[in-house]
Amino acid sequence: MNCLKSAAGGRNHREKRRRNYGQMRSFIDFFFLWALGMVLASFGTALSQGREVPAQETLQKPSFPQWLKDAKFGILVCWGPYSVPAFDNEWYFRNMYLEDHPVYQHHREKYGDPSVFGYKDFFPLFRAEYFNAEEWAALMSEAGARFGGLVAEHADGFSMWASRINRWNAMDLGPRRNIAAELSAAMQKRGLRVVLSFHHASNLQDGFPAKEGWDTADPQYADLYGKFLDPVVGYERWLVKVQEAVQTCRPNQIVFESGLDGIPDAYKRRMAAFVSSQQGQFGQSIIVAGLPQDFPAGAGMPILEPARVQAIQTFLWLALDSIGANSRCFTESLQLKSAQELIYELIDVLSKNGVLLLTISPRADGTIPSDQQQILSEIGQWLRVNGAAVYSTRPWEFYGEDGLTSGSDERAPVLRFAADDRALYVIAFGWPQSPLRPQSLQVRASDSRSKVTLLGLSDALPFRVDRNHRLAMDVPDLAPSQRPCSYAYVFKLEGFDIQADPFYGPDALVLEAAAALLEGERLHRREHGGLNWIIWEDPQEKIHWLVHIRKPGRYAVRLEGSAAIGPVSLMVSCGSEKLRFGFPRTDDWEDLRFVEAGTIRFQRSGVYHLTLQTQDLKNWRPVNLCRIRLALQ
Image (cartoon, rainbow, N blue to C red; front, top):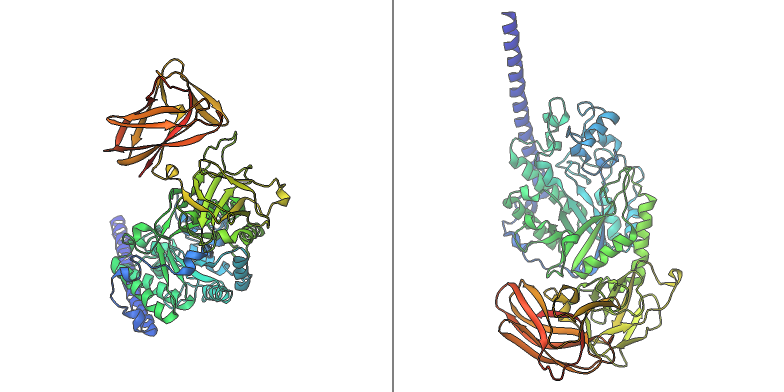
């Protein structure tokens, strides 16, 4: 009987605790809604009401300001209480509650169980005692950044500005300073544009596991860990935090890095209306950036992963990357990317119509480690020499060349292109061998005003244009210490009439000698000068390729080869289509000549059989064939 009473008493006690917990959570939600109303009232009608406008007023098909198109490079600071443990990565605040995660075990060993030491207990340890906004802004400027800022709030619920809606903020806890406002003011004083980044939408998506005894399950911390019974409370707080930060820091750009897909469209529209209203007050536009799936198609500035961008985009896009390879915030095991890697990434991004925002990782005390400063210094040194090819440039017709095979024994260097109203910039990754021959450029005309220079050197470089309209630039023989910079070298082309060779375009196809099917006993392949050639001596023999056409349409056909003994008449056939053309005599067997044969129409996608043969057996001359190229018209 006593046992039964005891068990019943235990159940009643637990039920009472659950009722009390629910009542407390309901009271807290009510309190937060009341506080939201007070804050909104203090901001005024622009904040509390906002014009109920379509999201596209601010987001759809945005008109990007000139400064952003010209800037190309910015620096973002990833810093907060999650920098205190300096372990694993910036998601420590979530991972410390995942019992199967290595961070959980580390946290228990160093700080104790989450029931003893929760994430909130890092806040007093985040003192930022050496934070100096002026020094940070100076470092960004010297690194060549044209805009910068910090993660205003990560998904940890801690605001880096003096928030009135969020008691967990840098003014009331930890540093007890308005970090975001100080840094924004220091950057604006130096003429840098300001960006604020937000992850706080993810805070509302139940990212913190709750277990009895942990602070994540304690209703008095529900506002920190995003545990709201009424989701409206969380959405309203999300919106007001953005509004607070914007009015506090007056940014030129706000970036939503994660979690925005969990915010209802009505709140996104209110955010867009607010941003639009602030543009009039600030006298400047505020660009909103986010993941493509988080906004309507074509809305805002999309964040894309640089490695996945394989072509020039028709819209301006944002590339987010970090100076750290294994974490965006500082950790004791932070592995840094090299200045060379980051410079290459910046060049690649701008050549494809992107803007790079690079994250750096200060220690919790506000110091930026010397190794990170050294990397930023190297980037700045490179930009001081080569900034003309970066700032204010636009993508050219092609973004560049990915190590295309040249006619030498070495592979051609990786190249990227950028242009302005005066010049085309050819940027080589690494010091190229001489002569430098960009494969995808066609020089239609040049004269006495045509000039090639290497940025950082004053003297013009010798150049020549061959009969295939290819440009060859003589690269000076300089020791590394004599070169104007490190890592990447910019050749400035002025006074040329240059167009992109369509046979190197994104829809072009290459039928290499190595892929051909040889019909005949005397036909054979030979490698010479870094190229694979088909030696074709018998006019009775034929050469075949299987061509995979992905985009139907009319394709121009070009042969690349040599005919040192004399001209020859050839025919390319594919189904009922036949191209008859002459291949001219070349100076010697190494004189690679380009001959356009005409066009062939491919009616639908699929695999086609293409044949090359002679059309005049009596007047045959041997041919060395390198490849056939097809270019979609």
